[in-house]
Length: 162
Image (cartoon, rainbow, N blue to C red; front, side, top):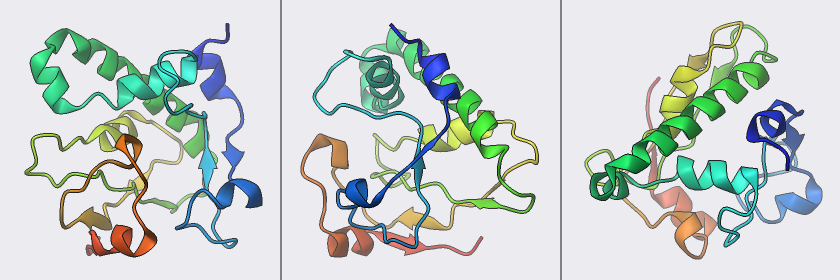
């Protein structure tokens, strides 16, 4: 079986025209890449699913089962290491804008996992990470049910000044 480290070292794949149909916010002008493919409902059946399930452990679950924190921390470190490699390909001065979590900061299940992984990344040149978009209301996470409509999705975000 392929290890997650070897999967994450592979070249990032670009979302193509066929896959773009599943991502209503993307247009043909957008360049969007992914490192692994998560199989929804697949449990821990693949290294990619193992990584993503652990990356998405909710804070409330960590409160109930603190021993799971080591798995979430492992996932953040793995993703941070992968981002080091892949984001080092960006030009100096590039700005990385992380997608906001589905929960507002004051929600018990607010999860800063992407910001943590980006903070662990050490690309050259260094990253300019800016939270330019934030949630203005907490919503159900897309991976927990049906995806939101584009208009609903946009109505939950607010633009911030860098």
